[in-house]
Length: 96
Image 1 (tube, one colour):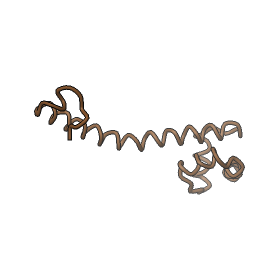
Image 2 (cartoon, rainbow, N blue to C red; image 1 turned 180 degrees about the horizontal axis):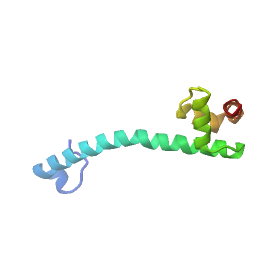
Image 3 (cartoon, rainbow, N blue to C red; image 1 turned 90 degrees about the vertical axis):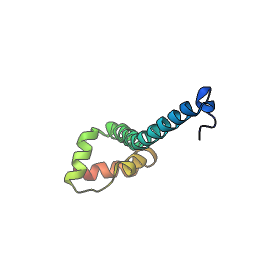
Image 4 (cartoon, helix red, strand yellow; image 1 turned 135 degrees about the vertical axis):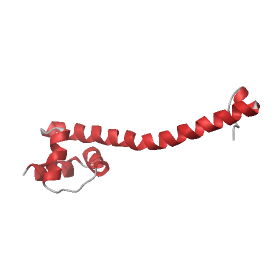
């Protein structure tokens, strides 16, 4: 399991075991953090798409919730980036 590690971490049993344990812990933590990273990217894309239309990210999300428009952030980010016309219609419906 320590194949590809450098120096003593690949040759010495104790160091290799220690490195493998740490690698597993980091892998778990980063799998969890990956979800947070994606949500942060989606929020940025939504904000960038909504600012030129005159509404901030937080006001947009609040308006969507009040109007019971159930779109998750991933879909909103995709629409803001690739289908700005559809995104604009969603914002207009949220404002109305």
